[in-house]
Image 1: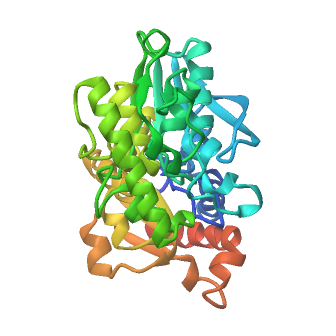
Image 2: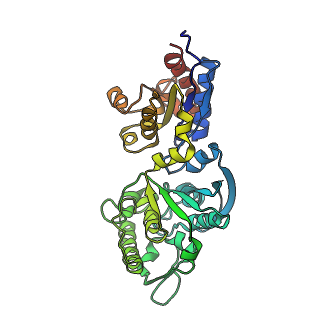
Image 3: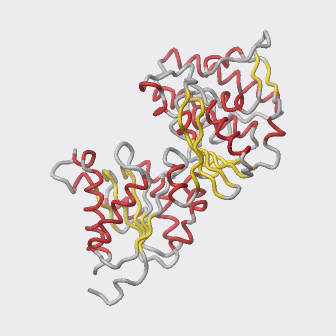
Length: 380
């Protein structure tokens, strides 16, 4: 073994392995394997996220405090959610309140699911004194354009008779008037940042309904209804705020919540993984490291377009540190993952007795991957 084996630490910074391991558990398992195979190596665990599901957990693992909150779920029934708070910064993860995983019994509600609970979480954060709200979008159950979020913050969305609209994207077809109410006062001095890697507009063939509606249970007829509702919403909001943001990159994120955040919360969009790495202190963690290990459920073509491992690889390269990947499956060719900046890639599907074990024994196999990469990359 070389004399410099113990020089420099290792940073383990994976995203979640969707459906099998949360980011923190993936980090812990990979780190355990590294420590077993290379005793004495300092390993720092820093699970990451790209703004979608897992953002809250990544913030908590980085030292933010968990603040529990009971809010309305996507169908209005109460759910137990949480904020992550550090100083005057609060992280709000949409999926905590209004995600697909929050649907009662897993039954989709494409026309009526809403984002009210996300607005409640933002309100709770502001009420606690947070002056910077980081809103992580992804995994939403509804396509309401962020209407519910706005209603939770005191905005009135009224029909022709002056009645408040019911929840969900379908109801937006009846929208006549928006009354901002106390919104400006509530958000005075508050910076809202949307951490999101989706650049879809609100409407059209790449819009919120057409692209993501089917994932939320929307039929062909439902998609027509939702598109009509979002179009009406964009028309009325544009007239109210004096600018049309329906085509803004990211307006279609999370069923159109991106649109509401841009148009009425004065939010700025930031690339999800870049901003989250900043927020989580990645640059400081990687300083002086000899290796970074990242990963996710599947290393594939999508990884190369703004997903967490690609962002980690780019940030590690800027720091002059090698980076390896661990994933449930690796669908990129060796040439592709090397061009993306990885010195090695380990697939859990190739470490067990059968590919199916990458799901049933993901934790154990992540440790095996940690051991293998330690032997191959740290003990030479």
